[in-house]
Length: 328
Ligand SMILES: NC(=O)c1ccc[n+]([C@@H]2O[C@H](COP(=O)([O-])OP(=O)(O)OC[C@H]3O[C@@H](n4cnc5c(N)ncnc54)[C@H](O)[C@@H]3O)[C@@H](O)[C@H]2O)c1
Ligand SMILES: O=P(O)(O)OC[C@H](O)CO
Image (tube, rainbow, N blue to C red; front, side):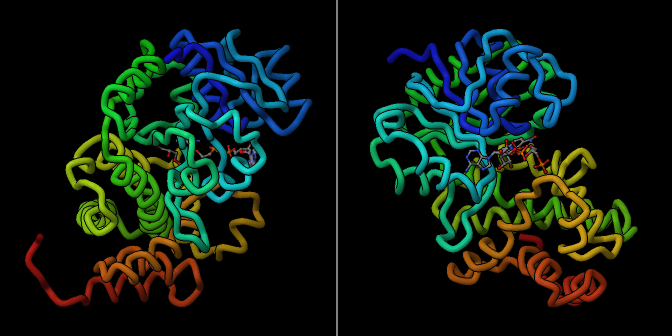
C-alpha cells in the first residue's frame, strides 16, 4: 500500500504539528482548515500564527478548506468534534484507508473512544490511534518527540509508523488501541487535578502522590475497558501522564491551576481558556467507571469539582480520609 500522501483534518495546534511531522518524514501533506484566510497564511507565509506563533512550516504542507484523497488520513480536531468532522467527509476518502485518530478524549453522551466513533461513522476505514507525550510546539519545532501508534495489524502499524517517522518524531508501534486511547483521554483528567494541586498551593508531594495513584486508577480503567496495562508503562501511559501532570505548558494543567486558585469552570472558560479536553472527558470517565464498577476516586473527585458539587478542600479531605489500604 502506498503511504506517500497525508490528509490532516484540523488546522489547530495539533493538526498543524502533525502535518509538520509528516512533511519532515518526507510525506506530501494537505492540511484542511476551516478558514480560507488561515489556509492562505499557511500557503504563503508558511505559518499558523494563531496556533503555533511564528513557527515556520514545511513547504511540503499545502493548506486548503477542502479535503482531497490521500493515502493516510489524520483526524486532529477536538475529541467532541471528531464525529462531526468525520460526518462532513466524503466516505470514499476514508474507505480502506489508514485513519489515525489523534484526539485525546471520550465522547459525551455515547461514552465512545475516538476509534469507536470512527468505526461507527466509517466502518470501512482502518483505525489507528496516536498518543503520547507530545506538545504541538515541540513537534512543530522539530524537538525530539516519541509517541505510540496503535493499530490492529502489527505489520501495517509498523509500516505506518515508518512512514511518519523523522529525525525528531519517533512513533512506536502497538496493537493496543484501547489502552492507548483510554490512557490518552484519562491523563487529561489527572492533569486537571495536578494543576489544581499547584493552583491551590498543596505542594509537590501531593502532586506526585496523585500521579502515582492516578497511574493505578488508570490501570484499573484500562483493564476494565479491555486494554492492556502493559501499555501504561509506555509513552501513551506513563510518558504522557508525567508530561501533562507536571507541565504548565499543558492546557489541562493550566485549567486545573485556575480551578485551584478558586475560579469556577464558567469563569475559566469565559476568560478565554484554550481547549482542555479533560473538562468534557471527566464526566464520561466517571460514568464509565460507575458502569464498569471500577474504583476511581480521583476521576470522581475531579468530576465533583468540575460540576460544582464540591470544592477542592472538600474532595482532598475526602480522598485523605478514605480507608487505609494496601498499595496495589
Ligand atoms: N496541542 C497539543 O499539544 C496536542 C498534542 C497531542 C494531542 N492533542 C489533541 O489533539 C486534539 C486537538 O487539539 P488541538 O491542540 O489541535 O486543539 P486546537 O484548539 O489548537 O485546534 C482545534 C482545531 O480543530 C478545528 N475544529 C474544531 N471542530 C472542527 C470540525 N468539526 N471540523 C473541522 N475542524 C474542526 C478548529 O477550527 C481548530 O482549528 C485534542 O484532542 C488534543 O488533546 C493536542
Ligand atoms: O495541552 P494539553 O493538556 O492538551 O496536552 C497536550 C498533549 O496531550 C500532551 O501530550
